[in-house]
Length: 251
Ligand SMILES: [Fe+2]
Image (cartoon, helix red, strand yellow):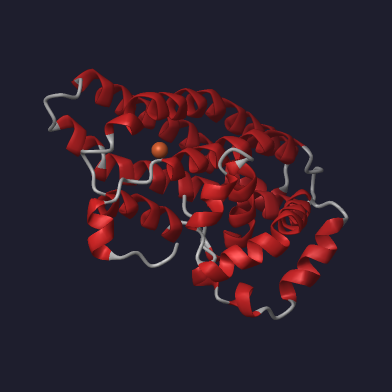
C-alpha cells in the first residue's frame, strides 16, 4: 500500500471495497481447497505438506481477519445507539460458527500433513466443505449490512488498521501466492482499485507478471506441471520480489 498522507487520510473515506476483495479471496480459496485436498494421493506426504501449509496460512489469515473485526469493529458499532444490537450479535455468532468449523479443520490438519492418510484427508476435505456455507452466509451478511455503516463511524486511518493487521497475518512464504490470488479475487470489476492499493513496485510487478504469477503459484499448489517453472522462477533473484515486506497482500 502506498504511504498515505496522515492529514489527507484523516478526512478520506474508509476503503471498505478492499474488504470485499479479501472476502472473495477466502471464498475462492476455500472453495478450491475441497478438490485440492481430495486430489492428494494416499501416502503422498510431499503434496499433503504443501496443501496443509496453504490451509494453515488461510486459517491464520481468516482468524486474524475476524479477530480484528471482533476487537475493532463490533465494539464501535455496539456503542452506537443507531446500530441495531441484534445485527452485531448476529455477526458475533457467525464468527463463532466459523471459528468452530476452522477448529475442526485445524485439528485434522497436522496429522494429515505428516501422514497423507486418506481417512484424515477426507476429514480435512469435509471440514473445508463444512466451513464454506458458514463463511458464505457471514461474508455476504457483513458486506450487505456492516460495510455500509462504516463511513462516518470510522476514519480511513482507523479502518486501514484492519488491512494492516490482515497483511501482517499472511505468512512470509505465502505472500506471492496470496498476492496473485487476491488479484484473481478482485475480478474485472475491482481490478483497477486492486492495482491502486499496491505499492508502486508491486503494482509494476503485477502489471507485467500478474497472470503468469497466478498460473505459476497456483500450479505449484496444485502440483501440476507448471509448478516446476514456478519454483525455478521464484528462486531467481528479483529486485522487486526479493523484498517480501513490500508484496504482502492486504487481507
Ligand atoms: Fe470481513
